[in-house]
Length: 161
Image (cartoon, rainbow, N blue to C red):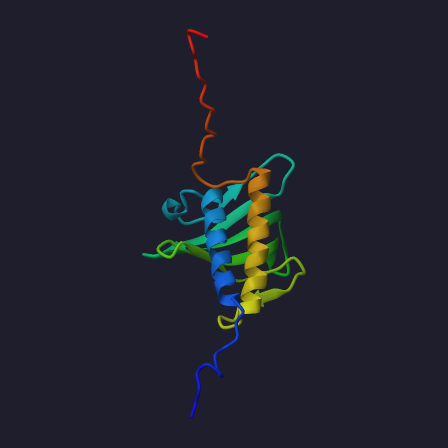
């Protein structure tokens, strides 16, 4: 007799934590590019004084997803047939599921990583990197499209005080 209790897959919450990471990446990406769904094709660049330019390119939209590349632009010159870019990540944002994941990319160690869809640890590694990188870019002040204005604190003008 086959018991499902004895042969239950062991995942120790790895899948749930990866889905949580996808959700966090979605939120960070929406802060970085609030109008992503409305952005047209082409290359969009975020430039800040004293910081490397952040580039969002190869933007494609479908009904439920947006797929794009996110990279730093080091220079306009080419190296081995491509511009110097690192990291250079292919990212897919799922609007309906409110998640965002790395599909593949050139990582800072200068190695190309194509994510195998069934490998949870590889997915966690790539998407953890994306989360840290997006957080860093936001702290620097990078952004694409319409940026949210800072909200002024409410001031209580009491005429009787």
